[in-house]
Length: 192
Picture 1 (cartoon, rainbow, N blue to C red):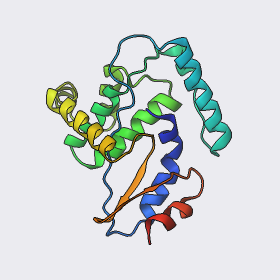
Picture 2 (picture 1 turned 90 degrees about the vertical axis):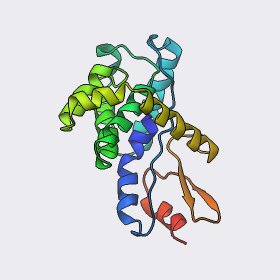
Picture 3 (picture 1 turned 45 degrees about the vertical axis):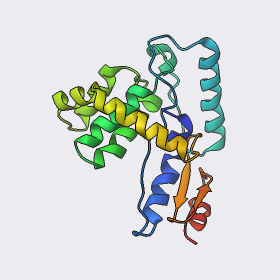
């Protein structure tokens, strides 16, 4: 549910396709915003909207559906969506990226609220996941513990901004700045 991660999706896809097969990619969830049922404060809402506008001006072909702000009850709560990615991943590793993409499309293109459990269950069904298993896993303490573990791991690696890329060759770690337009610039920094 990070707008900059959504804007980075196309570039990331191209980067992952271009990486040599011997590079193992590990995706970690960063959390962003804890659970809450409180409506998003007006100042936060305006900040997020201004980010959307800035992204549209910066990254070609990225557009947002601003109907979200009138059709949904915006909350600053991304942990449910993060747990949905884990619950999907439990049913198969491929569902990690598929659920991530489904959440982003729902939020940014379809004006659906992925802070709502009902939306996440609908997305799981649309992906062909088992509804009962997904719902159970989504709400389980084990899934929440997995999320907290991933957030802690992200922070311990110094990955405190979204999106973040880190190359770890076993001896040293190197941050790679996301490039929303030029995949080749990132690839050159990852393959040395």
